[in-house]
Image (cartoon, rainbow, N blue to C red; front, side):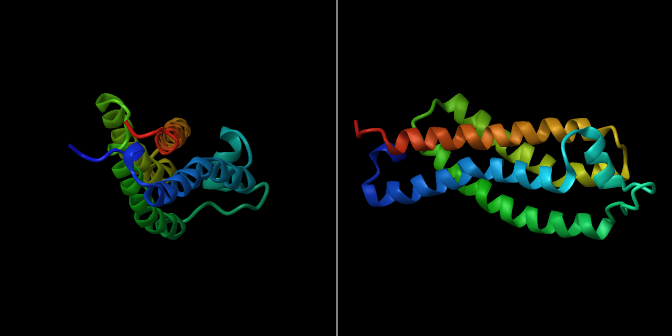
Amino acid sequence: MFPRIKDFPAELKLPVFFFSLYCLFGPFVNLAYHISKKGVGIDNALRYYFGSEAEMIPPQSLVSFLEVMHFHTWAQASVIFILSSLLGLSSAGRKIKMFLILSLFVSSMGHIFLPSLMRFISAKLIYLLFLDTVFFSASIIFSSLILLKDVFSKKE
């Protein structure tokens, strides 16, 4: 049987607590960042990716997408792996853990690749990108809340 987070000593619960806080606030920081760069709504997001001749905004280039994808691929993989591993040690039910772990990895891949697919294949993928962003953020938040609950739970 694997150890559970709620059974960890305080010196192991402390890093789990701070990592969970980091993950809990990350989606909100991400939202604020994207609103500051793109604005709110589908039209503003499309203008950000495709540019606007009237407003003299250049479209996003393949190089700019690759720069973001390169960083996100490595950074997100590390964070999602750690979050998923800790979630596996939580007291949540097996089905909940499996669902959240799968959703974290699948929606993370969408978060990385959908912007470039939308820009270079079909603008209609913007709707899937918005849904993926909400789903990814919700998966991170729920996973973090489960970990925080376990950090403050007593040993059995």
